[in-house]
Image 1 (tube, helix red, strand yellow):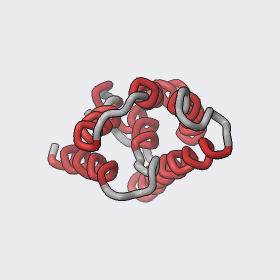
Image 2 (tube, rainbow, N blue to C red):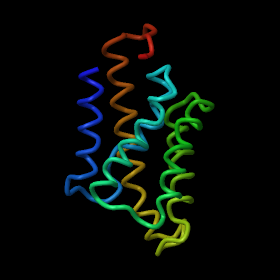
Image 3 (tube, rainbow, N blue to C red):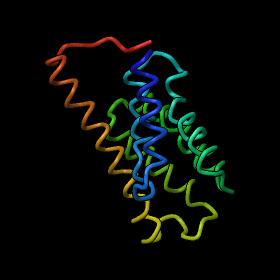
Amino acid sequence: MKSLLFLFTALVLSRLLPLPPNSEPLLGLAVIAPHIAKSLWVWFAPLLVMLVSDIIIGFHGHMIFTYTALAIAPFVSRYISNMYTALGCSWLVWHVLANLGQTYPPFSVEALVFDIRLLVSGLLIIITLDFLRKVMYNGKSYEKIG
């Protein structure tokens, strides 16, 4: 329980730190959630992180699009077993939904450049999970948490 609380706090802080926009790992965590946890509640942890940090940072007019895109990611990942492919699909959903009604329309150069950081941060999360699984489990199966 302490480790989950620590992770949650670290994720909230990752959104509060002065990092480049869209560089937090929430999409990557939403994609790996079905692969590391049995509980559906864990699938929604990235949404809770976003909500808590938005309470601190401030809400915006397009939240429904960003929250919906983040909520869809674990379900995409549940049905696409390859996490890298699931991340690509989830990122595409994010890119289209999060940019609806924004300054830059989806698939404009500006929107793609902005959202590529989200894809890279998600990719780093998945690569890290893959590496840890190979090192810790050496190809053996593992148990999902709670």
